[in-house]
Image (cartoon, rainbow over all chains, first blue to last red; front, side, top):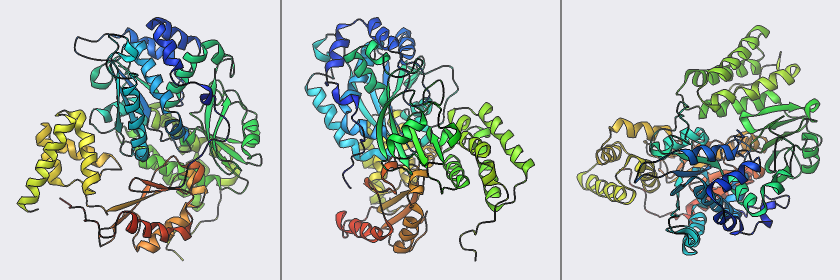
Length: 405
Length: 170
């Protein structure tokens, strides 16, 4: 294995002293911790952008019976194509992540923590176990965390087994419970009925590390970074056709054009923001801002250079979704297959305009009727590529299928 | 499977369940450990796990067949998983794939007749800034070029031990 150094900009997390955030949190009441997180306007870094303070408030308000616990789950099932920031966080800033989990536990009154690590990251397991062990020995985990009587909290690591859908929080919980990773109906939400039917907060790796930073430096500091409706800094996983792929930190609200200039991708013909489930922006849209109020993302930025075939890109994404759909609901299970067949028709140059319209209407059905975010967002890339690159995809010369001469 | 092996598997599963707890939530960790040790989870193993956890074997089968990293058919000692997703695709995964097939003499989804190597596609491995990437069991290789493929396979034979005991496909 080659040494992996993906960081291309200094990260704010470098300046956060491990232990500082937790020390501040331990001096606050539970309500004040949540108040601080809410005041920072931190929104979930996994992509959906749910306000973290609100989530914690709901979990804090939920009740448990005697002998049962609330849970804090760190979602480290980073599977969105083009996303690898959590890999960097877990390898270089694991303490900040575990500290964030401990702060969350303090805030909502949880006694158990679980880090759900994707199976593809199994090579990090030993490192993370060692960090947990060190934290236990330092009294930062276990019975009476930091000597505070009554605050018992420990973290265990559970491995995923190669299923993208388990990044969806209810599917993740199903997986933890020993089931197929099939998303649940919501409500009830995990904050109320989560792991083993107990109140459970599921937060992204970066969200939890950000919480540690917010505790250490204050909500006002965090809110001062970013745009009006998207507070704070964000890690971006940049890959594809640019000079310097890697992990970057930028304030939210940065335009696509500014971002491309920083990563050496200014000659791009298109940029996929938000991974396979995100949208594909053409040059005309490079002035748009990456923020919750404009183009939201979990941090995946894939740059496509001038020579790239956008239909090939759409096909790769759709193959991914056909593979990763859990198959539970029909719009997603069948819809993705139909879209892939449609793309193959386009590839062969045999798709009529009417059929293309049918496909777009199927996309709408999937977005509306799928049970979870996977099927609701899987048509996004296809729709944006059809809309933005229509001249490129209709009336093509058939390609040779492998094996044919 | 002969009786001695069955007994051994049964003991092994009981021990694993002893470690992870006799609860449904222990199912995945137990299956993952069986997968790691034996490169697949046999029908017999699934039946024993079901009996021990007090659930229907079809439930266990459902879980094993859901997850890409669990297998109910025998897999090679070395599972090579090449990332097929977009960034590795842009970085040239197709030629790496072709060379893997050439060197191993099998197609994706197949296992070599000697039971040493399985070749599979993987969805995004999270190595998008240094693709094409592939996993060999727990080891990740990045920026793989077609001319490195031969060496990676040789590394497997050496690093993991060419004469290491074959996993029992119990």
